[in-house]
Amino acid sequence: MNNASLLIKNARVVNEGRITAADLRVRGGRIDRIASEISAEPTEQILEANGCYLLPGFIDDQVHFREPGLTHKGDIATESAAAVAGGITSFMDMPNVKPATTNRRALAHKYASAAGRARANYAFYFGATNDNIEEIRRLDAGEACGIKVFMGASTGNMLVDDPEALAQIFADAPMLIATHCEDSPMIRANEQAYRDKYGENIPIEAHPLIRSEESCYKSSSFAVELARQHDARLHVLHLTTARELELFDAGPVAGKSVTAEVCVHHLFFDESRYEDLGARIKCNPAIKTAADREGLLTGLVDNRIDVIATDHAPHTLEEKGESYFKSPAGLPLVQHALLTLLEHFHNGRLSLELIANKTSHSVAELFGIRDRGYIREGYWADLVLVDPQRSNVVSADNVLAKCGWSPFEGYEFRSTILATLVNGVFAYRDGALTDAILGQRLECHHR
Image 1 (cartoon, rainbow, N blue to C red):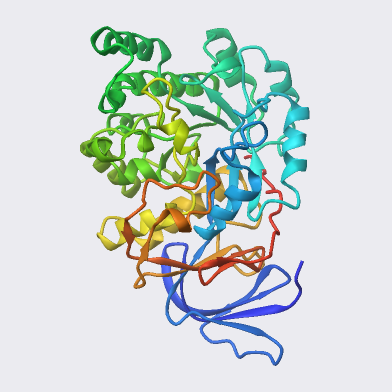
Image 2 (image 1 turned 90 degrees about the vertical axis):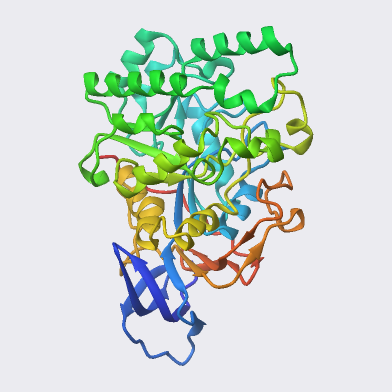
C-alpha cells in the first residue's frame, strides 16, 4: 500500500446526512484527518477539489462481471475498470457464471482470480440450488457476502423452486439471503399467450407485460413471508414495481431484517424507451411503467428502499440483436450509474446525502463491511470526487466495459466523475484510468 500522503483541499464532503466544507488527508490507504483546513506537508501530493463534491465510494451490491466462463462479455479486470471510472469502489459479484458459484471450491477460485486484477474492492455471493443446502450450512459467516437465491427467471440449476429447499435455505442460511423475485410459472404462461399471438416475433414492448407486475409481487411477497416465518435476513434485489413497496417497512437499514434494493436503470428508464432502445434495455425483472419508476424514487425518499445498485450485466451487441426469446437480459451500467443518480439530484428528486446513504452507508451497514462506506478518520479512503457543473456525453468510444456499448450513448449527463480513489490511491483521474490495481477483498461481518 502507498504510504505517501495525499491532501484533498476545498472539498464539499457528503457524508452521514450532511455536506461540509473540509480538507481531507489520506495516508497509508486510509483517511488520516478531516478538518475545515489542513496545511500541506512539504512532500505531500495535493488534489484541489475547488468546491466539488466528495462522496464515499459507491459500493455496488449486485453486479455480473461474467467471470468465469462468460468472459467474451466481460471479466473482473475490464468491468472493474468501468466501475472505478463510474465512482464505484467496491462490488459484489453474482454466482450465475460457468461453472456456477454453488460450491465452496468455486467460491474460493473466484476470490483467487480477483486478486491482483480487480481495480475495485470485491466480494462474491454464494449461489443456492435445490440441492446444495449442505454446502450452504457449511459456509463461514465471512466467506461470502450473501447467499443468492433465484426464486424465478434463472436458467440451469440455479432456479430454486422446490418449496422444501427454499424452507431449508431460509431456516439455515448463516448469512443474508439475496433474492431475485419473479414467479416463473406465471411468466411461462404469459410467454405462451404471446407466442400464440405473435409466434417467435414477440415485440420487445411486451417484455414488461410478460415479466409482469403480478409475477414480481407474487414472488417477492412469498420471499418476505418465508423470511418472517424463519426469522431470516432477507434482501430483495432490484424492485421494479410501486406495488412491492407495501411489503417493506420504512426506516433506517440498521433496524431491519427484511430490506430492499432498487437499480439505477429502473429509476432512469421506463417502458416508453423500448421503442428506441429495444433489447438494449431488456432486463429481468423488466423496466416497467413511468408510475412504477416514480414509485421507486418515492420509496427511496421514504426509506422503504434501502440500497441502490446497478445489476451491471453486459452482453455483446450481437447477442442483443437476436429475436425476443434469444436476446439475453441485462445491460452494462457501472460506468454511468452514479451519473444517472446525479441527474435525479439535478432534477430535485434525490439529495446528495440520500445518494451517499443508499449507495454506500446503508450497503456497508447491511453487509457489515468493515471500515468502508463512510468518510471517517481511520476508514479506508474509498472516495469519489464529482463536478456537478461539468457535462459528460456518452459515446461508444468512451465506454470501458468489454461489451463496448452503453444504453446511455448520446446522452449528456450534467455531472462528471473527476477522480476515484480505491484504498487511498487514484484508480481513475481526469478522464483516464491509472495503473493502480489495488482492489482488496471486502471484510463482511454479518449481524
